[in-house]
Amino acid sequence: MIPVRDQLRALLADHDPRRELRGIARPQGGLVNQVFLLATTRRDYVLKVFDDATGMCKPQEEHAVFDHMRSIGVPAPRVERIDIFRRAAPFIYSLVE
Image 1 (cartoon, helix red, strand yellow):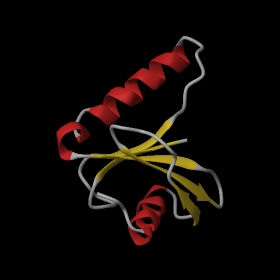
Image 2 (cartoon, one colour):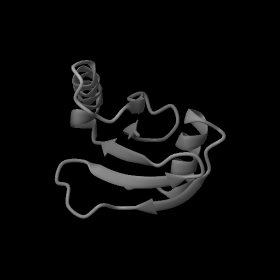
Image 3 (cartoon, helix red, strand yellow):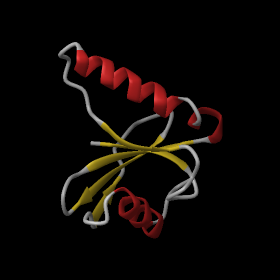
């Protein structure tokens, strides 16, 4: 599923209403998930959209790995939001700093 701009605005508003979407880009490459670079008025994010087969566990696994990496002093991104229940958008996603 490729999110549309209104869906991206909705999930950002759900995360923090002070953030306004300024731009969307797709990185070159990437084989498993759909990845989008979101520029906002406050901070930029990486949005990962997961299919139903991997969406229930992969975002949580990434979150746990990133947290562990930071706990042992390895720089790692912070997962800001995971939505496996499709509350803010009609797809499973993680929002990473």
